[in-house]
Amino acid sequence: MRILEKMAVKIGGGVNHRIGLFDMILLKDNHVDFAGGIDKAITRAKDYCKAKGKDLKIEIEVRNFDELQQVLDLGGVDRIMFDNFTPEMTKKAVEMVAGKYETESSGGITFNTLRDYAECGVDFISVGALTHSVKGLDMSFKAC
Image (cartoon, rainbow, N blue to C red; front, side, top):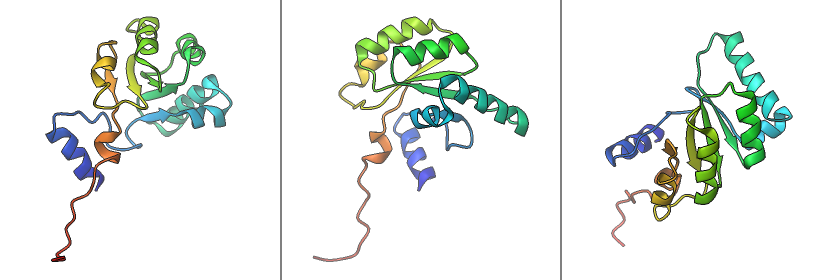
């Protein structure tokens, strides 16, 4: 069903930036915590790509400005995802990144707040409701 969900997003005018976890490395908060910090998570992801001969983009999720600054100091990623940032926080984060990396907003974004985030200048916005809140079509043949 994943391919059908992705096609539905495309038909509706959206853009899928990846099909699955195999075509980009996404370092989420739990990966950072498990690795022992931002620097170790990024280093391990880069080491994995090198050891396996993979040329994968690395995206890292940040939860606050301290984590964002750590990523900016270390580098080595392609995209930074601002997780559960308010529009005001997002605007400040985009200014901090200053075009050095692709940026993405994610977490709690709805169709009603989408424009607020877009106006902050992020490159990508994830709206999970496009796929996880969709109700499936009842295909049963029950008459009552």
